[in-house]
Length: 325
Image 1 (tube, rainbow, N blue to C red):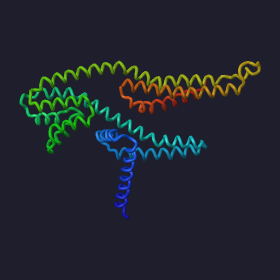
Image 2 (cartoon, helix red, strand yellow):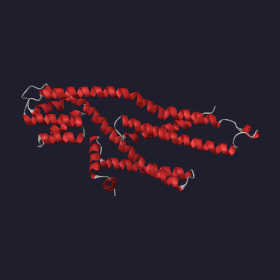
Image 3 (tube, rainbow, N blue to C red):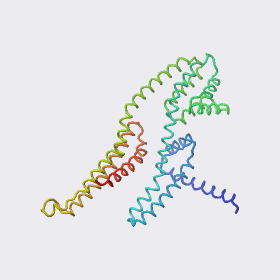
Image 4 (cartoon, one colour):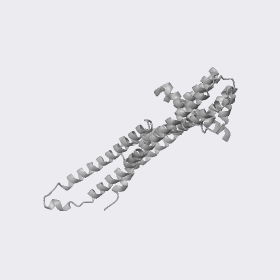
């Protein structure tokens, strides 16, 4: 078997593995949710096969690495199993939320361009054909929104109806704002009436709404970064410094005067306190992630923020705890 045949054989094997993974995942999730995420991957210029292959390969690598490291550290079998499973699942979860974030970010950029698009559509002379309007919209610079209308124009050129092309545009972007714009264009096409004033009024309404949302976001951004700074750095550093200060106290003389607790009791209490500090810091980071995601009205981003804040907060705590007074 030559090199080319080997490459074809390996690609075929990976394709079969990816298809089996897709089927297995499909057994545990509703079909509509699986299809919805697959459409989002396509909008992100990716595919379910690529998503699963990358996540499983990276997860398998991290799982094996965690097993080797923990085994060399003589950890218990239970911890090795838990960490290996977590390491295997982590890339899949992080990749999932990354794809969701990329889709939502691109959707917001498209929504921001909708008012300009409607204003552009409102200035065409009365009687301009819908195909000409669609061509001009596709050629104009509306950021990520222009390629979507190019796709719609291509679908119409290949024989699809205007109604179907605009509904497909609305469906794949999963946006109420884009859906509203597509419905207005469709209404103008089907009725043949002069829609210029409606386009202009809708664009004005959307611009006012966007301005209000920007003011609201500006008011919340300080609170957001305060939570991130507090959960990721300030609280862990303060607790770490306090723990380091207390650990450096010398209580050896207290036993001579029969004052206070014995050394073993103090050691046990200090160990319990340090463990409670770590648990508290992780909980604080999780709560901060929850509140930030709630502010952004996107609960799915809890995992994304937590995956950043929890490790950062623990690292800041251990770094501060290592500081000696």
